Length: 284
Image (cartoon, rainbow, N blue to C red; front, side, top):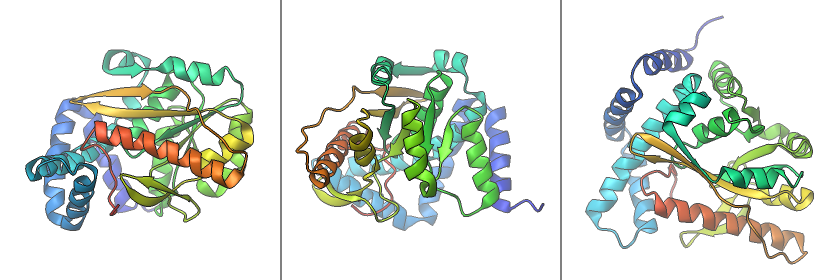
């Protein structure tokens, strides 16, 4: 079978990352990320405009700094993804701060499965791997890649660490199975890729966000637990919040909207708290 160039690039980059100290790989990623913006000025401009909306009180200099940090953080996220083979319990114990793990234990004790929600923030994929390595049964909704070799590589990266991948075309059936087994399914809830979401507001702007977490939570009475993996220098910190509480009306459409809006507010809070770590490359 012919090796596709994109797949080959990922494999070569992974060999480099796994043979270098992580700090050195991060530094290389920082340099490459600074060059990337020269070739993709449109992306740089969009991120800068979004940051002005999120932080209207910040100076132009601060916004430029956050924009640069965003691209550097994304480069480091890619390094983290390639570093998955080295993540085990001992690595987590030495290098990762995990805060609020008892909130997962409480949610699982209800025996209705767990819906984890997060965003394209920090090192979100690594967070799922960490939770899986710590012994929690985790599945995640993930997009299919157009390149089949790259897709197999991505899936293998996750599943070798115990994180099961669910593709959107299978989600309606597979998510229910996961929840009935009292396992966790994780949704990225800051972007609707399929045009089937529900309108919500974030940073004062109308957006469409995935309805899945709200729909499954209502159907299965499953707790929704926010979790984020944020970057503090060269270290990562996993923050797991208490399950969300909702004021419901009994009218399904309105309750889906309310739950989705509450999730949006949680994401908004984390984006504001960790500027330069949200990877939203479309205009708000």
